[in-house]
Amino acid sequence: MSPAAAVSGCRKHLFGLVGSMFLIVLFFYQWNTSEERRAERIYQKQEVRKQLLRDTCDRDKAAFPEEKQGWEDLSDRELNNLLVDDDNGFIFCYIPKVACSNWRRVMHVLRRGEPYQDPLSIPQGLVHSIIPLLTSFPRAEMKAKMKHYTKFIFVRDPFVRLISAYRNKFGTVNEPFYQSYARKMMRVYGNRTNLPKTAAEAFSSGLRPSFSNFIQYLVDPTTDKRWYEPHWRQFHRLCHPCAIKYDFVGHQESLEDDAMQLLTLIKLGDTIKFPSFYQNVTTHDFVRGWFRDVPLEDRRTLYNIYQEDFKLFGYSIPEELLNG
Image 1 (cartoon, one colour):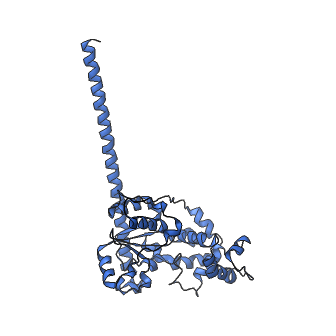
Image 2 (cartoon, one colour; image 1 turned 90 degrees about the vertical axis):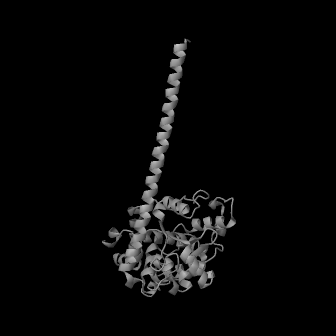
Image 3 (cartoon, rainbow, N blue to C red; image 1 turned 135 degrees about the vertical axis):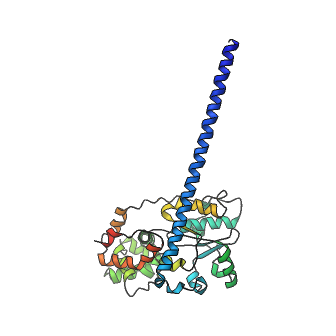
């Protein structure tokens, strides 16, 4: 090869290398810009959610009479869903059937210290074992933690949560819920007599309350709606968002993004990953199918019971269910 050809080849190689480096730099610049824009969108979404809470609480004060004076005037029983992580400085108000088990898994892993395990390695039997409740501390300590710790909550569409609760508690063999609720639902709203003594016997016979029976129980005027079982108790009665100023409001419908942002907020984004295997596959047809046999009057009564949750957390009114 002549010297001129060698020089030409070197130049082509150099230009090719420079070009490749330029493309790599351009790629990472675009990726960083995209990530920054994504982070900004998530941040703005949080601001919108928190502002909606403030506006709704101010506008609908009559709907939350027990919270006018702030969380300090709530009883320990009313604050019983607030879990505390002292090492990482956060308080989580858990709502059953809203990514609750996986956040508990994260808290268990954090309590065990580094190196952090995969949260999914925590077996189901340990998920609901003891994590400190805010109410386990003296009121003075509770006040200090509420002031200085990051407080967060996760919610989901209220009607979709009811479907999930029904499937979980009455779609499988569950002895406590069979004895406490299912037998009554089938007897009072399903007109069934001589019911099996155990959940296993009932399930093997194909006996269980229908979803419509479940809704009938919820809307029954004699049912104590203030102290519903926690799996279907209203969000605002579990977590009191008008009395507690939450720093972060997550939605199960955007769980992956919200969990990542929250972990970053509490400075754990680089050390632990939320087990986000949940996929939101809920559609209007899915919800309509479940409510198909629920009378229109019961649907409207049900919405009135949960309407504050819809309004506080920005969920659309289910017009297709309420208008026939």
